[in-house]
Image 1 (tube, rainbow, N blue to C red):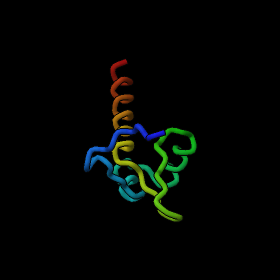
Image 2: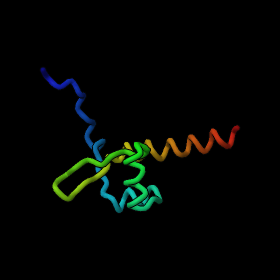
Image 3: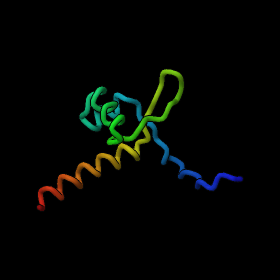
Image 4: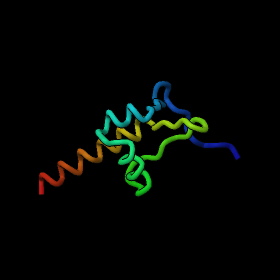
Length: 76
C-alpha cells in the first residue's frame, strides 16, 4: 500500500536541536524531558544514536497552546 501522507511544503520541515528548544521555551533540559514523559511536550525525532531534534512547528504549537491557556484563564 502506498503512503498517503502529503509531501511537505519546502521549508516547512525545520528541526531544532535542544539548545534552540530550551531558548524558545524557557524550559530546562530536565523539564523538557519530564514533560515529554508526561505527554505534555512534543517528543523529539531521533536523528542518530546520540542526536535528536524537535519539529519546529510542533514546538510552535506547544507555545501557542500555552498562550491560549493563559488568555482563557485571564478571561475567566
